[in-house]
Image (cartoon, helix red, strand yellow):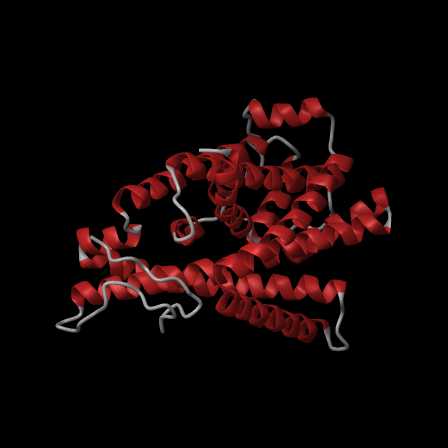
Amino acid sequence: MSRKHSIPTLSAGLLVAATGVGAGDLVISALAGARYGTTLLWAILVGAVLKLVLNEGLARWELATDTTLLTGWVDRLPRAVARYFGAYLCFWALLVAGTLISYSGVVANTVFPLPFFDATGSTVWGAIQSVLSLLLVRFGGYRGVETLMKGVIAVMFLVVIGCAVVVAPPLGEVATGLFLPSMSLEGDALLFSFALIGGVGGTLTIMCYAYWLRERRSLREVSLRDVRIDLGVAYLLTALFGIAVTIIAAGVRPEAVGGYGLVTGIADRLALALGDIGYWVFLLGFWAAVLTSMIGVWSGVPYLFADLWYRYRRRYGSGMEAPTDLPARPTIGFCCTWRFPPSS
């Protein structure tokens, strides 16, 4: 396959990279860097490799069976599995949505403060960005999300990785943290290691790739080689971003110990090293990261709701005649604009 035909498939992987880098992951990476320097960089690398292997396996299932993983769960496993996943999906969606709306609102109100109390201004900004993301996904569809995300992702990675290069410790120290795994026995180093491994690249959002891959397959044929390139680029960027945030925190050592205060603390310390531009550039990169994660979740997670609902209803509908494919705009997961092919 020529290079010309391989490049377009990279867009679905970019959505994975952008969606997987959420506010919580950024804060965990920053906390790890602030407390332990570069000693836990290896955990980010391990996490990215594990997510790459796992997501490739899900994509292999998709390409081999032309069905989604949820179709396999509902059709081949006990009903309790589908019910448990449905309950977990609802809990996860509420938790993640609340976190993304909160962080996007706070950072937007920091950059463009509204004439309200800080809490009110953050709430208003969070609501505005949430609604705009919803409208983009609903009416722009996959292509609209893909087009916008490419530009925002470029800003996000250039800004954050650029800041990391400026404040990075010696290269040998970074290389040691990446390729010679070690762990301090002090404090919560073990917990941070597991948090970094599990958090890098997202958790439930890795299941969204199969649906974005189907969007891409509706436009052209996709091979396993394309998927490997796609996911390889996605998790390379994901690892680089997590490593960059950790290096920044290790280089500036903010005084704040958690939450959004950690983010502004890093920005304040960058201002001391780079001037006011360092402060605003880092906040811009953080804002871009949270916003792209919100758009990715708003785009991908409704597919999971819709797929689970229709597959479950088809098998356990007590006589209800459920469709074999999703309508173009399903009532559950109404952000979806893509039609599922019939499953075997």
